Image (cartoon, rainbow, N blue to C red):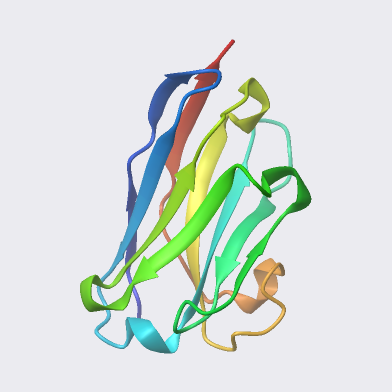
Length: 124
């Protein structure tokens, strides 16, 4: 059982930046691909970004490319999401998740473990 705890959310003005962190309890963290998803009020949860086990490959939703960066530190059992040039439409609860298959990285069904989420609010 992998426990994931997100942090780093908050209130930021449009154009600002935030860095989210997701700390894993499991020492086998490096065996999991990791992803970030988000859910805005009234919307379905959507894929944001994902990273492979060793961090060599990353994947992004089209609307996040060039603004968001996912990276991981396996020594610290932590995955990060650097978010720049934030927009009001980025307002959502952001979740990290662990994917033991390292496949179909944008598919929520591949992720077995989820954090509780962290709120990001971007004001206009």
